[in-house]
Image (cartoon, rainbow, N blue to C red; front, side, top):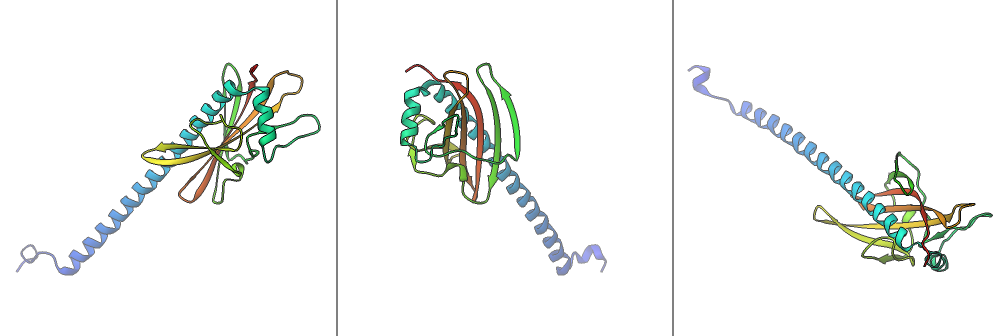
Length: 198
């Protein structure tokens, strides 16, 4: 009986199935990794939108009264010998891993994004649930956003420091923090905003 008439042996079938299984696992692993990377990028893009919305809200709400309320209710506002800083509950600090700059007609912004395996060090403090970011200065703003049917709780902190020699102009640091797959991420933006007359 020839080989074509006998067909494949059991060993040959098992070897073929094993090779097919290895290839299938590799493809699924690659697909999962691509999905995670895409989701992480989408969360960062959403964080940029949250920071932009925060800066626009601060342009509406940033007054001397708003700042004084912020500094009096803040649990950790900082000061230096020449300028004082008002914040909404905590200072924002980050070490940049990648940065980009963008310029608008009203202000200059610089942004940095970082990730870590621990907690979001720049967004610690008591949280306040808000419908829109940076409208409550009594604590860290907790702003839930649905991204791909998953609700992500973004935490937003900001602080405003008067610019020396320019009346009513503040340097504002905005930090947005979020968690994804047991890792903490944060996105920071520095911009200048002129306070409004209440």
